[in-house]
Image 1 (cartoon, rainbow, N blue to C red):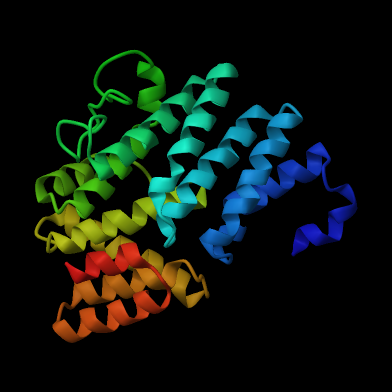
Image 2 (image 1 turned 45 degrees about the vertical axis):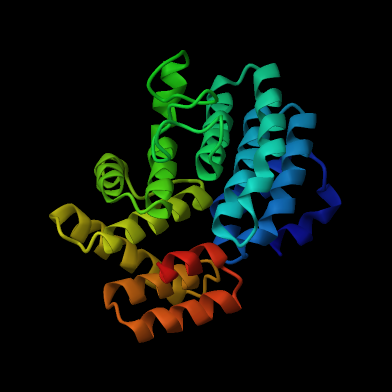
Length: 265
């Protein structure tokens, strides 16, 4: 690893910020996402401890995003989300408070219960309501994240109207995101939704093609995180019982249970 060459500087501000930027922008392309979780957890502690609050909370955000791209049970994230929201509140970082609250609402919608929204594919629960309450500026700042995770719920709950609506909303945003994890999640589920909907509209065709090319390119370059997604896209683009069975076999072997479940549908 490039950082090993500078291990004597471990713990310095420059080293920690370089490590944060490296893992945020580049390393995730070649490192399996689940291997980055403890790194981002530690970076959260270390960066906040030296007063680098925004990158510290940014690392915390990525420690939350990583499990959505692995086989790890996302339901276990609730205590960490509560703690991160508390830290962000104490440090008066309202944008991060909104993000961590939105992610808590996502989990409650996913599991159901008293804190869930009126519909699992919308955010109008008592933890996070995208349409009412304060923090309008912070909510607008995180609208891309809100639409992305509503799209995840739409795919999970097979809500085709919500899938189509979220694809339209996300079309306004560029592909590029400096946070690779967030870009990967968005492109994964925009592509899945466009293919599940059958590429009926020009917008669905556009994003199905764009997302297929995106993950095909990353797979060709050896990204271990792109290959499982590209396997799903291939099965959905030319659907057959054999294609889905082959995809499920590969995904089960990689313990990618969330993608395997979508293929089983």
